[in-house]
Image 1: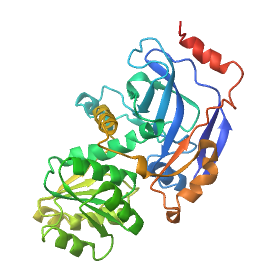
Image 2: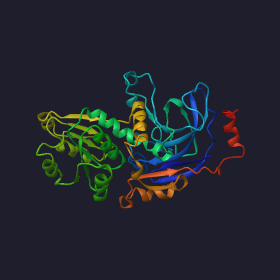
Image 3: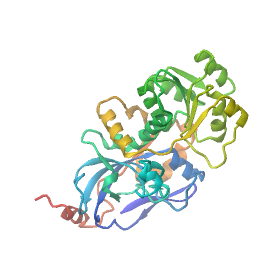
Image 4: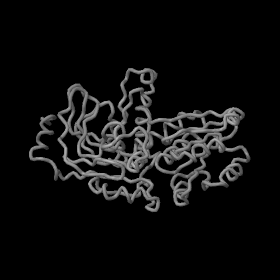
Length: 360
């Protein structure tokens, strides 16, 4: 079969690899149908992604079809459409024992620490699949992105009726906005890109937008009646933005870092204490987040379809990524599809997969 591998910064290659082995106990073989391109993939392509090594098969935002199941699997069956929870946790460490599998001591994230889903087939633990009979594969591929935002808003606690500032209006920031609104917050979007702010106003329905820059603090003070936002989410992964966010948070407020960068965060400790700020990190999401999000999308309460501005075949990705990381391309969300014509599949491969799960 084929997959796409990032061999070094700036270089993606299509290569041939062996098909996965037959799924073992508790394992599932899935066919990748759609995959989202996220900020992590783009940072890795640029050579700026923390906790990353090359070569690596990217891809952790996946919409998949179950092709075969191993012994002991009952939660999914061949033909099921699923979102993939790409966080492989140990289940035994202190974080896992406390229900925080998203920050497991030994966590491996598909497409970052281990190879991901930019290929035709993948073997996964069955427990990492979340089924929907209603959503498209493209919608399922974006569930993971929404999970990041949902988890970040949960970290902030009760924010109903408060002013919440979301810095960065990429897909992660858009997810934060969606769930902050669902929590009852009055949302302000901040970004350097006017087109993205227009999108936030028109598609997300935020209460206000503020261009990032020197005048941002004054505009925020004006919008909030001088109070400043009590909940601030930085989804940029940009050092300057993250450190500047301390100055945009209300006294007694909460700052949540959703994005990350390779370096140290510094801030004025006296000012931090004077305003008794709460600083939180937010990492990944949990199985409960996935279940909740699929339900919300199925009920039409969250709609990611307007987010997808760019599409291509996975095999076109090596020529597309350089275009898509250019801000002038106007990418809000890019999704790749994996062709299903079986062109790279050896003779008899379909029969081998079907034999694992006979229909009679």
